[in-house]
Image (tube, rainbow, N blue to C red; front, top):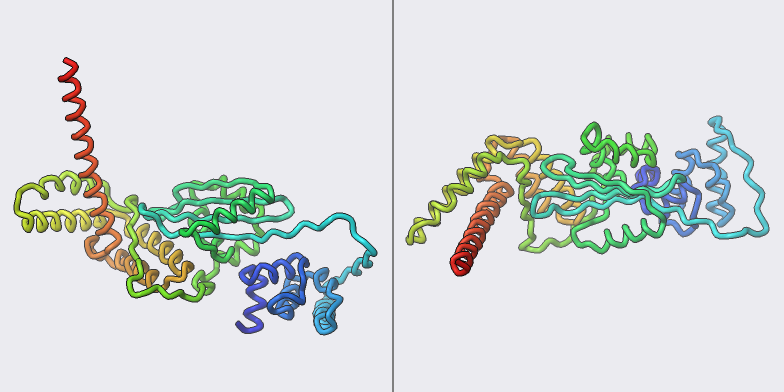
Length: 355
């Protein structure tokens, strides 16, 4: 990463937490940072003269901080006199808590979970969002004590389906799904702790610019994604559910398989024909982003291609996420009908015995 890129990352809060905390808050050990000179430049860009004035050692960094202060002063920035050093301090300064974001892989219903936490002088706030069917399905926010916030982080990092993403990437998708929507209350409360400039920068962000290096996905990398049922046409799905039992009748296995394939294909085609293709594409994009930040770019490319195919007008049976969820739905509904019928027969037999 170039020097200018390193400075920009610290200013945007996408760099390592220690560098961000020092440049923005003036807390931490400057000399121990990965790139202390970038942190000094970032503090200067932020106008954080207090952080620059706090640098007293080593000599090289003190000189760089002094040069940054001189440049700010020459541009007309008022430099307040640094407070006199104290001989001793009472108590212990509280550690500045970073803002964090986590995104889950989509579940069997195609829903993803986005979790944001932020801390400022007003306290600690967490915002949880369930994203599915191309929209925000549910939100919840909470104000937390420091130890409760740390417990939230511990639980999030312990889940295999969740991955931490840059905070501004999380803000980007939260704003994209929540701004002007049905969850204004939770979103508005959370934004009370988010600087307006940071939100504007997140809105204009290219999330993929912060994507991590890929991991080895292996030859049989699982890129399976199930389209959310909420984007598909209910009438077509219900028609497929009604047709399914007739397709499995008869003793000819080959004929049954052929009949089932017709039902699967025609149901998937009809469900997307009158479904919400734009919402399907948005769901595919978010699922691809989750895969990217889990270090699985090949899987992400497969899912993203399905969203593009939906927008291009491809039949539902040719989009694996749609075809697969239709198969899962029809089979599960048929199994449920069998279970319901068995329970009815048992109840009828029990009634006869009692009579």
